[in-house]
View 1 (cartoon, rainbow, N blue to C red):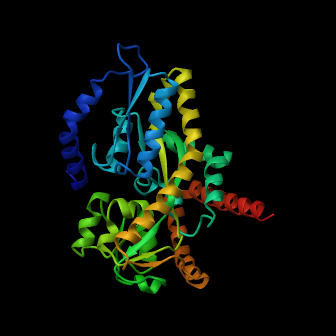
View 2: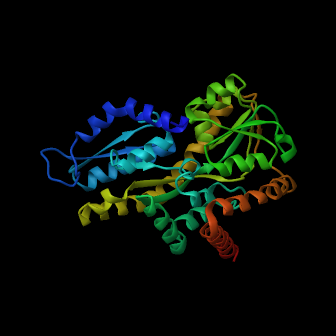
View 3: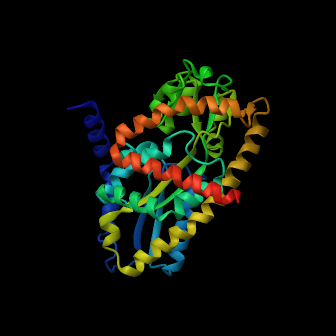
Amino acid sequence: MSQAKLIRVRWLLAILPCVALLCSCGRPVAQKSPGPIQWRFAIEETIGSVQHEYALKFKELIESRSQGAIEVTIYPYGTLGTSDQITELVDMGVIQFAMASPGHLGKLIPEVQVFLLHFVFSDDEEINNQVLNDNPELRRTFDELYARKRLKLLSIYSEGWQVWTTKKAIRTPEDFSGVKMRVMTSPLLLAAYAAYGASPTPLPYSEVYSALQLNMIDGQENPVFAIQEMSFYEVTDWMIFAKQSPFITTSVTNLEFFQGLPSEQQELVLETVDELNGYILEVQREFNRDRLKLIQENKPGLNIVPDLTAEQREAFRDASQSVRQQFVELAGPEGQRLLDELIRAIKSAEAKRAQ
């Protein structure tokens, strides 16, 4: 048995009592029962995070609009395993909803790694939000990709810019030489930092703090709110805002579960996630702004680079170009079409904004 399969078997055995308990709540969930229908929502982040705020608002709206007929239980990161594992639980039908970020989901759906490419998105968050939510062609493509893996895509949104935290100043690709940079388990993220000359190191989110503390890694990337809530700033010396990519995540449900819901419950879910698109953009802005202030208050000696110069960003942009070809090799012709359409949509939105 391979190491990966052995780890999966051990995980399934470890959570078997929890799975049995969850399943005992009764299925199908649309069936009439003495108490409220139980929906379960697993997130990839801790309590107090952007994803947690999304899930809380989802819970509030669903329970209110169903007049208590549906009850949503939220499972924060670590409760049911890693990000990869909670996606698997959605596929198994054990939980109904989950966050599934492309950094992990890319192994299952290679095309979603387009969201991980550096210097593809606009510097304007409003434009990125518009492209992610209001482009029918892009959305249709992603809906089909997720459906092939028995997932129903609900929403795509940004949690804010990815920010580098490192033990040394990073202003050029050459500065990354030899830097052990923690990344998620995506081949594209490995390639992205290798292209800068770094030594990319995949690690679970829960192990990043100790790895920084023990000098097993030299840096990592996350939105500001995550850097604060996970206390990564305590074990780093620099924060660099390069605007290389936003942290994009998706919310999903089990496709068979969704298709089996009564039409009014399907509409309830879709209306709720549609309302959340605008809500979560403002939430992440507030979270990232306020958490940066907390970081500066708690560690006034932290070196913060709020912007790179145009020349410095161009050097990183040039170094990142080779990774686009690797994305196409991973995702195939459909990946190339997706990348081309995403770039066209962003440029079109930027041109309209400039008018």
